[in-house]
Length: 324
Ligand code: UT7
Image 1 (cartoon, rainbow, N blue to C red):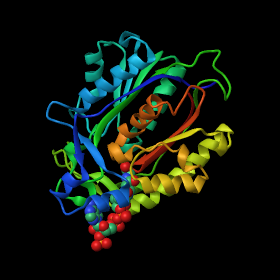
Image 2 (image 1 turned 90 degrees about the vertical axis):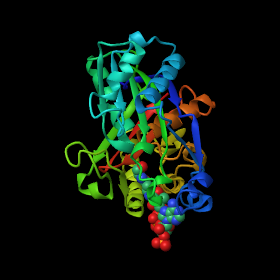
Image 3 (image 1 turned 30 degrees about the horizontal axis):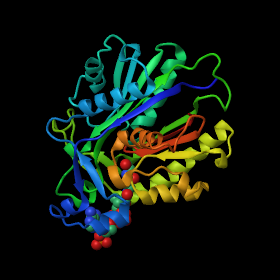
Image 4 (image 1 turned 180 degrees about the horizontal axis):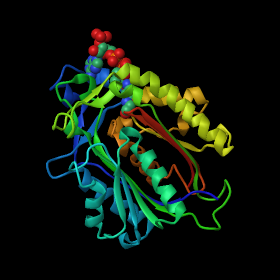
C-alpha cells in the first residue's frame, strides 16, 4: 500500500523583500559575494504584523483552496517550525483556531530545516494508522527574528515564509508505484553535531530566544554527504531508478549544495527545483514553498515522481519519494 496522497499545496511570503544590496548597507558584505557563494539574490522578511502563525495560516488556506476541500475536513495539523509564535502552546493550535477546525490533533515538530520532512512522515504515519483522515502539513518560519543582524556569516543566508500541503489518508485502492502517494520516507539525526548549527538561547538555558550560530563550511560538507546518502537509501528502498525521478525538490540552503548533491547522484540539474535565489533559506518552509512554486508554474504535474530532501540543525536530515 502506498502512503498518504498530496491533494493540494500552498505557500505564503511576507510582503517585504530585502535585496543583497540592502544588506550590504548594514553589514560588511556584497551582492557579488552572496550571489557567488550561495545563489541568493533576495529574501522576504516578516513585518511586525506577520508571524509564523499568520504565514502558516495563509499557506494552509492556499493549500486548502488548491485541494478544493474545506478546513472543517482537517483533523490533523502538523506544523514544522524552529521559530514558533510562543514557547507554548504549539503554533499549530493557533493555525487550527484561525482556520476554524478545532477539535482534531494539532502539534509542532522541531527539526529545523528538515522539519517539513519530519512533519510529513509523522502525518503520513498517523494517517496510515487511522488516527486521522486528512492532514495539513505545514513548514513555517520567521528566522529573521532569531538572526544576529551584525553577523554577516549568517544574516545574509535566511528568509521568512511558509508552505503547506493537504495530505489525505491512503485509500484501499491506492497501491503500486504508479498510484499517487508517498512511496518511501527516511529520516535521520546525529546529535553529536549540535555545535555546528544551533541557536545560542532557549527557555531552559538562557531564558532568551537566542541567535543562529553556524560553522558554515563544516555544515556544507556534512550536507552533501548526508543528503546523497539518504537519497540513495530512499531510491534503493523504493526500488526506482534515478532516471525515473521527474523532479527533486530540495531544502534551499545554498545553490552550490544543490548542484553538488545532484552531481553526486547523477540527477540532471534541470530536474532540480531552485528557489533559493528568491526566498533564501527559509528553514522548514523551504521544501513546501519550492514544491508549491513548481506545481503552480506547471513544472510538477499529477503522476510525476518527486523527491523531497532536507538537512538541518541537530543535525537532522531526511528524504521522501512521492508520486504526485
Ligand atoms: O539550512 C541548514 C543547512 N545550512 C547550510 O547548508 C549552509 C551550509 N554552508 C554554506 O552554505 C556555506 O558554507 C556558506 C554560504 C555559509 C559560506 O560559504 P563558504 O564558501 O563556505 O565561505 P566561508 O565560510 O569559507 O568564508 C569564506 C570567506 C571568509 O573570509 P576569509 O577568512 O577567507 O578572509 C569569510 O569571512 O568569506 C567571508 N565571508 C563573507 N564575506 C562577505 C563570510 N560571510 C561573508 C559575507 N560577505 N556575508
